[in-house]
Length: 80
Image (tube, rainbow, N blue to C red):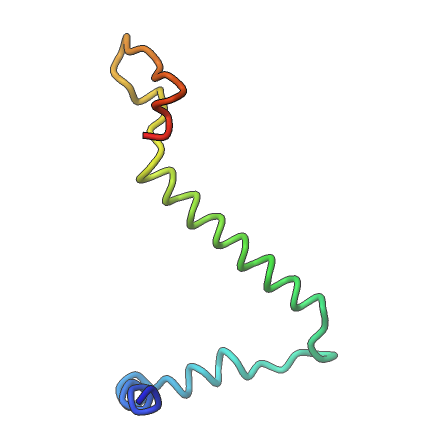
């Protein structure tokens, strides 16, 4: 079933050429642990950046955005 879906998408979006461009890159000297740790570091950095933007935009409300004269919330209310 998934191969039929992939073939259907490939016929419309030309995924095989994109897949070849992205994944069939020769690595000089072959793959090593440096490439493994580098890609893992990149993944973790992107994950941290995306979750940080999510928290900053949707979850966290800094005290500086409260109305003037408002008291800081008690520590128990910080978790909403």
